[in-house]
Length: 253
Image (cartoon, rainbow, N blue to C red; front, side):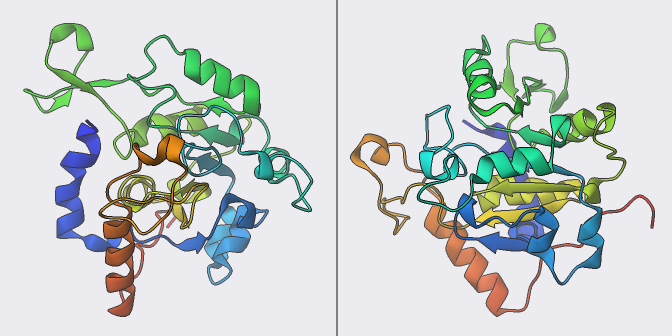
């Protein structure tokens, strides 16, 4: 269970615009480089210095720790998109934040290690545990009643990574862009951080369930996310009513 997402749903009810991205593209291969080009109507986006990538259904097939092949080879695509991203955001400026690899679901870190080896990109270990009974961050050894903090609750860990890495030059949340396929986790996290959010609206695979119109391969159909259609319908509903994503937060204004 993703306790972090469950708790933050109340914030989303209070302010539904938190799930709205600042930009959207169909698939990972449609991401512009540099990422700031995705926000052509926002001059402030030129300040973006670092990028966070979701894994499952963003650049990888769910449960796989490799880049989906069409995103990592020159053919049939004209550009190796993943290589292009690494070159545009070298070192610690590119970060993978998954709700599987590098979390409590990966206690020995083997998935995160393999993902780093296969992609050449740092994977955030966000194994902070939260005491459910106490409702605040406490050391895991102080309670047996805990849950790992997953997206969108690992905002502090992400910002700390970029700020404390000397090669990023990040000093403000609006210098970070977050790319992912889930509105209720990736995009909500971006808006709660005060960063830029890019929604991968189609993803790597297509989902098929009672809440989704996408089509999945049989091997992953049983694990299809349950809220994809709900997210898409809420997105359409809010956009039709003129709602827009919150403005990213700059510490310099």
